[in-house]
Image 1: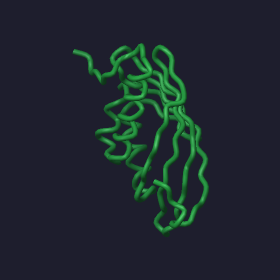
Image 2: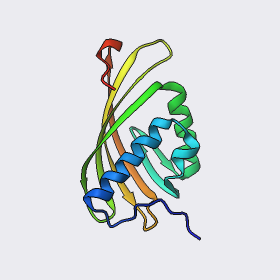
Image 3: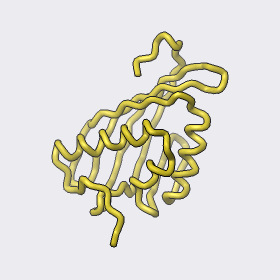
Image 4: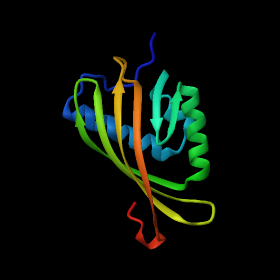
Amino acid sequence: MAEQKPPFPPFTLETAQQKVQMAENAWNSRDPEKVCMAYTIDTEWRNRDEFLNGREAVKEFLKRKWAKENDYKLKKELWCFTENRIGVRFEYEWHDGKGQWYRSYGNEMWEFDENGLMARRFASINDTTIHETERRL
């Protein structure tokens, strides 16, 4: 039996919003084991300047990410959707080991397989330094 992650494409406004909220919740858990299960075994990623192939590579990437990005908090917003694709804008806040806070802004393009697993994720992200008092999330 194939792995499945409802809701499945083709997406409606309701199911696209549900998929985005599920992703936000999972990423805010900062649990690489949990998060990586939303992706196909052979998922294709671009995250900033890093290109990843496969669920295991994603898991290792997420471990590195959350070891660096302390107190990570994310907010995602549905931007658009079609049959099996969703566009998302997001922002997240975190601080480094020296206590410097950042807000990271970006856009993601997602493509899902028929089982609701993300087969492709392309993210463009920019960081800006902020003071802790400027945090919104």
